[in-house]
Image 1 (cartoon, rainbow, N blue to C red):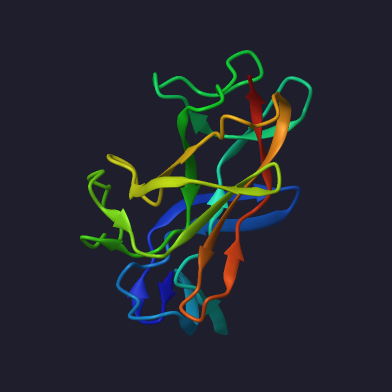
Image 2: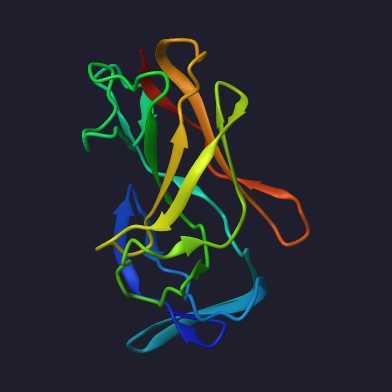
Length: 190
């Protein structure tokens, strides 16, 4: 897969009910956001799509499903355990949510290379919990992973406790607009 003249590593290939798809890492070396040409080559054939929009950052939250089928975000508590319906986040805790698509870091990240954990996200971020903004503590490229970032945020002391509370992450574009990721929930707050 070629994106704007750079090779995009293929992370996964699937065929679900006859729909084929590829998961690729957008090359970190793309100079700036904008429109690019994407070319997919296989032995004996190729396909090209022009004017594919590439954003500086386009968040995507990693999530999973509870036994009830309710989806919730992959969030780590301070002890390294995941927030689940039976292991709730506590009010006042600093937790970390797993996100992809947060773009450039300082120092820079490179295509198909794992993060060091000391690479800070460049784009300003907003985290929302129960439809209100919360304090973002840090955002870094995940150590030992490709295309995964940890965004640390504080669960406010006055948060309403409960199950499956809305959570969102947005990145600010260079023009000041917010680019929101997929909606999800935090499994539980106590």
